[in-house]
Length: 159
Image 1 (cartoon, rainbow, N blue to C red):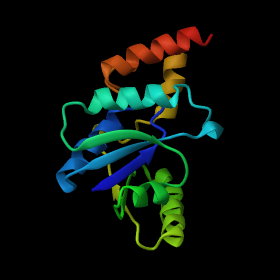
Image 2 (spheres, rainbow, N blue to C red; image 1 turned 180 degrees about the vertical axis):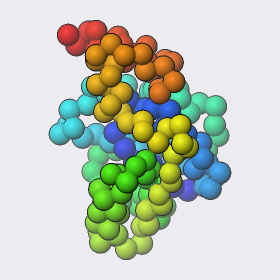
Image 3 (tube, rainbow, N blue to C red; image 1 turned 90 degrees about the horizontal axis):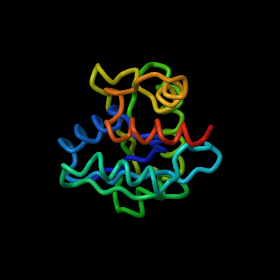
């Protein structure tokens, strides 16, 4: 089993691709939706959990739940030694490498496993999707259709 922690604000097709491919390597993937008020998420943690549950419904072996605190504590709480992280571009590497080493320092028994996204999702990020959608761009193909609709509604209601 592996845990895949993140904010998922919102879940993208890149996240879904990573979960789908992780299921080839691990019998179970627990997706941890981070409760992090400092990040100023557009969607509430409950909304993000619900969207991930809907996006991953077709697959057995996926559990989605919120978590607060350290990723290593989340992994330990699920009795796994694997934290799953995605690496899109070289720019992700420095941050993710630093985080993996910090996590290893906090708990040497927990390892970080990196997966690269499929090529068509290598540039997709939640932050850029929110920015593009806020400027009126059609984000279809970058997020599931139901997420695109919710994003449009959320941005319209936040103006």
